[in-house]
Image (cartoon, rainbow, N blue to C red; front, side):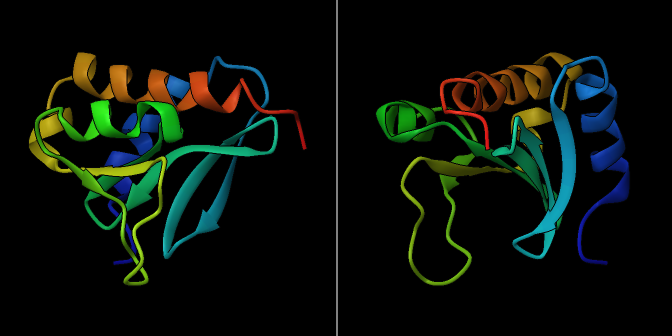
Length: 109
């Protein structure tokens, strides 16, 4: 199992009505792009969220968040969130909103 399909479905249900969203396999999981820019995704049984460099430290201060590190080199502006951090729909939506909001600040690709 590369990533949690049920979690991907939860994310899809939140993202389905948003414009410019597409899915792409990336980082050994599934990412959701907004206008061509990565916003969030699923990696194994966690979510990854692109919060941007300015919100990185504040995001890490949130419960169950940690630096995104797949290659041994943490990605600034990206966080992993453990399952307890998105157990409810409200929590998952809040993280997805952070990722989508940041992606929308970037020029479309």
